[in-house]
Length: 265
Ligand code: MG
Image (cartoon, rainbow, N blue to C red; front, side, top):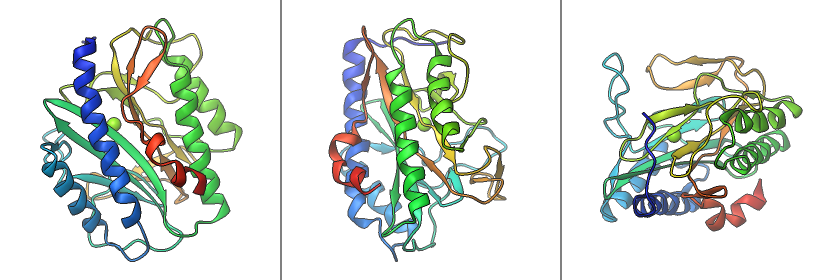
């Protein structure tokens, strides 16, 4: 069932979105060579709790077959696409690291992801980050009442494939509200004019995962970490959005706080 949210409910989601954006901004100076991923996780958990929120991912279990997610953030370094568990690994100069943050505040979930360059990254890594951001922006630009999910998927896929990149198929955007994962699912690939229509009050994520090479994926043995099948780089950016009467509102506006970081990539 797809739930449509009132303006008052969306105001609650805006506060949750603001919290995860501030977590991304807080992380920025700490995402550097030598830091351990679990240190970043601890920073974000302490911050979210200090603001009265709860880490949404911690303990999350999509099915009984999977062990509960043990951390506050998901990390994805280089060929990792999503859902890496932050452990003792140290970041190195030239890495790219996607950090996914979810927080529940006042009963509403904010969900966002930003891929950070660590120190000086290669031109090809920098280009992947730039194009992946552009893919998210291109998807957001297609959202509005009456538009189709396929319009968003096509816009993202066309841009990614124009650069020779692969769009991950198995994972997509999702409805979000009181729960992290609600209906509907939205693909980051597709055909214009096809799929469900957007309606005012829908709240969902767009979170394209763009691979430097093949779109194919595999899972690591921890049951969580998803990596590229060919070992090439992957990047991801995510917004939580609300469909408005004439387009959409970005509820996780990290692009306003992270202008300087944006210029780096
Ligand atoms: Mg998400």
